[in-house]
Length: 308
Image 1 (cartoon, rainbow, N blue to C red):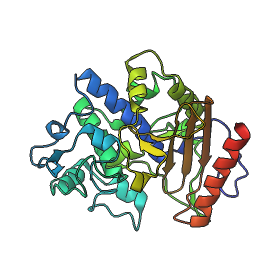
Image 2 (tube, one colour; image 1 turned 90 degrees about the vertical axis):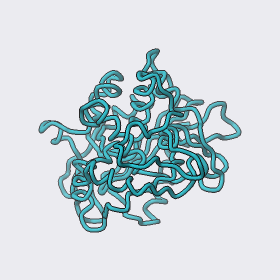
Image 3 (cartoon, rainbow, N blue to C red; image 1 turned 180 degrees about the vertical axis):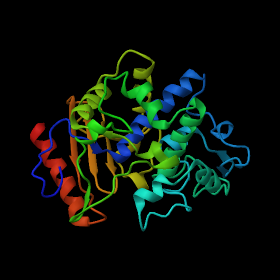
Image 4 (cartoon, rainbow, N blue to C red; image 1 turned 30 degrees about the vertical axis):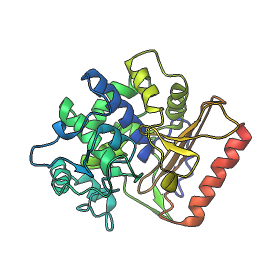
């Protein structure tokens, strides 16, 4: 759990799960839109401050669907956020005001719905909208509306002092790094912590969602909504928060999402055809190291082959 400590993780050890958070953000957003009588095709404009211009390009206005499937044209990270020196501190200090200041420029990289460009900014904006509209923190809202109803009591944004004793220490190379205690206005992109036990339970519910409004939102999030062969490849499509992979020999797609923070890497793979869930959590971050990233992918492939 920490270099040199001798402590070995178990199924209830906490990890920062990074961008797997986005699948929870997507479910919470779709459910909230349904409660308001809106759809994912609704524009986001009514939920932003009046000083922000209508976000559009090529005559197409940004909708919730564009944010959810990474086709909004909004950049990967906002230009007024620097992660070069102390990422954990920079993210914690990235306020709602700074996010809106960035959006005031109204700059999109592409016409919405035409190009896949993975965007932490877009998913962070969704989290901020949920927090503002429901007058509570993103973490509290997602726990109340998604995690607790699904029985995921070890998936949360803030850990208690007792739970922190079960939190593994993140590493980058040989050194330990600061936890990402907050992502500020971008919490919806990656603030959650979880355990392998909870993520396996979550994956099982993705395969068989409950018969409820929450379950319907989970089903909606699994429907492919965008394909961009050039940037996603021929077998991949974007759902709402999830990536869907289709293979010739399977009847249902494989859903997946990875997550990375300053000191953690996580993978969640849901094979609906074989009713198989694979969760791999590392308390280390490859920091752009190609060999380490390739080794993680190879291990995931080997594990899937063994399980199948």
